[in-house]
Image (cartoon, rainbow, N blue to C red; front, side):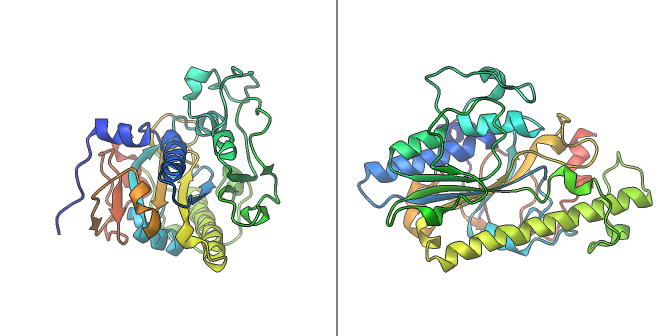
Length: 325
């Protein structure tokens, strides 16, 4: 089988608005909604599943140590981005870019815990979807690193859910999963599901029992993340909405052990990103002609790739960092 269609940098940027994961997701979501509305057909629902502080430690990225059956299945149904990067290796600046569509260093929101006021003519992108009639919810982390304009969300809380919309109303819903956040390692677990002795260590970490335990515990958290994301996808199926909903998954930035989060290396910025367009909305996808391929081996192309199943090659912590050590 021949490989995926080659996508040039120019055509890719024209399709999705930018090469950064922080800009790809909102640009693609808005583009899909706008094109559907312009065509006079039914508008797609848009669902985001976001996670915190994790690199691509998934089976579908070739990581043999990972236990991620739900993400692997999801990747087989959609497009897996091999080289998606956050614009910052820490949450608040990255999230300010995601919500505004502007780089944090351009908007003045790059310093952590910024409370700068932004120009009044700049809207957070859910506002555009609300103006188009979408029911927009966020459950529940914001951390935008700037003051939120009024009217950004219909509901942004721990109870926010697309199920609360009016009958027949299209929705844009964000579910933020925090189980992989760095705080999950602040307390050592007495036992881990993943065997510490088999943990793939990056070359800059000492091979000690403590480090191996931390890596094993973190892969346990990624496994828990996989289960939570699988629950959200199962709910979408149960509600009969899977064929009407474009689903995005991505992490806010890389992480989380030493020399990743807050470090401007691939380990701090390389993120997993998977997008699934249901059959009825394939024409809205910002790529054309991608072919299904076996394996998800890491490359340095910026083109999206359609994935079928996890590669037998190991995309481990060691391989993940080899280019930056």
